[in-house]
Structures are given as C-alpha cells and as structure tokens.
Length: 100
Image (cartoon, rainbow, N blue to C red; front, side, top):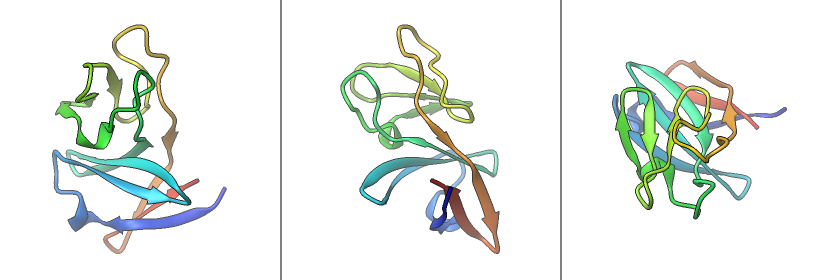
C-alpha cells in the first residue's frame, strides 16, 4: 500500500463530500462529524458520482438512481448493491492521506 496526500481538512467541510483523483482513479472523500472517510467514487449500478451524492448521517445516496452506501465502510445499504471499496484515511497536520 502507498500513502498519498489527497487534500486538506479545509477541502472537505463537515457534512460534505468531494471527489479526488488518485492515479487515474476517482475516490470520494467525506467529512462526517469531523472524521474523514474515503470510498470508491463510482456507484456500482451506473457509475454515478458518490462524491456528489446526498449525505444522511453515515449514508451516501447515489444522485443517479438512489443506491445507498455506508460511508465509513463502503458497504451497500440498499439491495442489490454489494458495496464499494473503502480506504484507510489518516489526517496529519490538517492534511488528508489515504492508502491506495
């Protein structure tokens, strides 16, 4: 695994999501109650951007067709979705790093 800086805490205000690109792969970052989480950005249904989705607590809803995922784990909340990959996140000195 490689640790890569993807931004700062200021880039992802609390209660919001943002999409970043790492080595050509889109990853969605979320700030939930001051904790930063990272999951694959593309919904498994039709590739909708989860970083642009609707946040409700720890659940992100795809803006295209309503598929839902748990933000901390990437697990699917609404069937038939099996879930998306989640990434380890570390925040140091206001900078966000993820392991890819």
